[in-house]
Image (cartoon, rainbow, N blue to C red; front, side, top):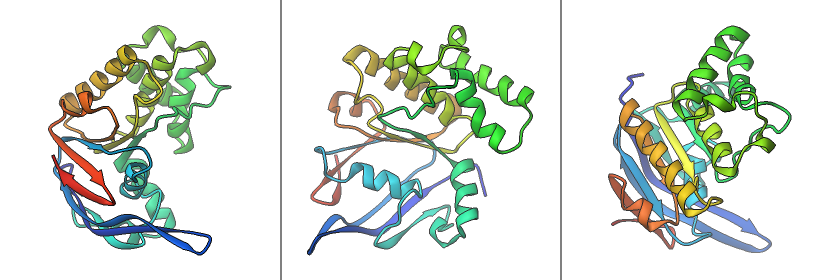
Length: 227
């Protein structure tokens, strides 16, 4: 598959059953995310931004419709193929950093590489390089509990880059941070987007930060509106 990845969303619906009610969260969404763009998806809390990102990241299935990465439908792959696709194509940054508390910053980044049976030497070298990239060269051996919220999120961003993904999905990456720290994380994502030509799709309620992206979409009552 080419390094130039166009992500297409075609008539995607997503509903959940709650008791005897069917709740439609996404209602026929269609959209194309061009390679190398930075896109913000805004909308009120609970509108379905995370649901859409989870479907884009193959963490959840749509009720109907399809997505494509250069025409490849990842939901048509086997579970093992999906896992490989997700691990090599997509990087994730969540509102909660999901770092393992018993491991150092460096080890948290090494783990995905060790799972893929890379040597510890290679994994550590890559982790050190990424921590330097996000400005944490002096925090290699610190555990998450010894880091500030912003530093923990920078480790999470570094971990998202560990497989050299073509797409990064960031779900409210600044949501748990104060204004200045949130700005730092947003600028870091902008730098990564520019330097590595990675497609970055951010779900955010911060309209000021959203306005700085290449494209803004708003999720309203289950539908995407171009801003």
